[in-house]
Image: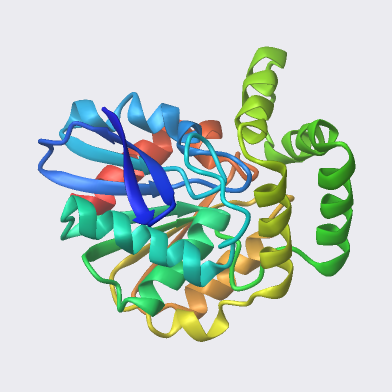
Length: 260
């Protein structure tokens, strides 16, 4: 079931809400520059196992409204809080991939983890995102040939082989975003840091990270494991930046075991 939630007077976010009657709720935050559809291979399985799965498209991405501003971690976390309030969510698991992990971390710090009982960080872009060099290259490509940029991102995203049709689908997810929002998030990933936020996370935290990740190095997951209390790091030996697809069976089982 899909619907829109108003987070500001002129901004609505698209929310995919599967199995609303499920006994336990997982809120999924996608990575840059994708949308909730990246979690298709979780949504195929977890609702059938009794979980309520909520996928949120950030502002500027997927089916959500695409304003010209608001692409910093504070505003993106505020947007998530507005959805949590609108849906009256409580005692839920917050799962964020890559930049979605960054947003989840800022949400936990900014709102003292309001409503969250468990946190899952998947190849999180934290405590830092892109280096200045990487960000500036991606920014130039985004502003001049965004489809080429998206193809390059896809080529470095996965460790395992992907078919041409899968690659085309994945590139299409990224191109559903607006160009200005795609560019703005690159700048945010370059300029914002999350180090001070980490000590404010107190809920049980599962860290999932592909050891072959070329986007966010595995060493950053090890750093998060050291700095987040009550965290557990599970390396995915056969994954790059996309363990939610590359080792989807293991990924789904691990999520269920962690949540219970």
